[in-house]
Length: 272
Image 1 (cartoon, helix red, strand yellow):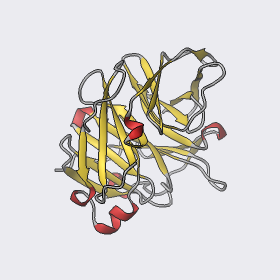
Image 2 (cartoon, helix red, strand yellow):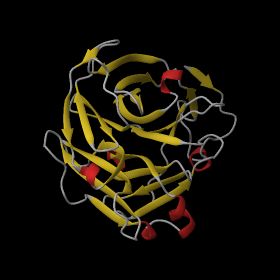
Image 3 (cartoon, rainbow, N blue to C red):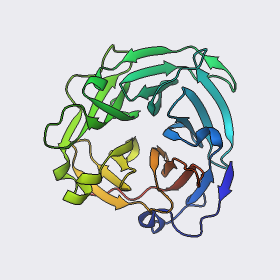
Image 4 (cartoon, helix red, strand yellow):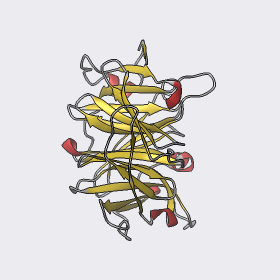
């Protein structure tokens, strides 16, 4: 990993909030994570990350950005369109865009690990774009990017899955019209690319990489705060995680001219 100098705040609204020594730093990720697609807290100072094509999990150290270990699910490695990752109860969970959830115990570096696959059933309802721990213990939240059926009223829709169940709950955990959260122009460009439940502050972060919006909402779907990411530093945010403490982590996919990055900041104050 390459540590990038931060000459200017990556997210202006966060830069004003009293950065801790470990805040406001960014690492360039290796080529294997050029298409980084999700983040999950792995420990007090590390995160799990994955790309969007293979079920390979990387644990990244937040002190210097080096990869502590890499392990793969399956032999051969599972291929798919992976859109989110979570870590709960000692297991790591990867979700595909069509709602398949792959569960495995983290392995040692270079190890291939066995896995269990569940069909959440949410893929029939929407294209999936994220996975995170839920407020309820033993549950995960599933983020919809785009509903399969055009209902005429764009919505932010999230489902809940109790770990180990055959399918997710049929009724959404949260379903909120975008008009309640965003202005008309913002709604037209809104495409959620990641989310994270911040347990310590009872709020949900939702990021839209396309128009660089970062939303804070409560568990009832009420908007607490809305901020805009710096377009130069965050051209395509795909992953988000919150380390207790509280540090906000954002992962941006790379391009032909730019390395993928992992940035960390002090958390913004809870809105509302």
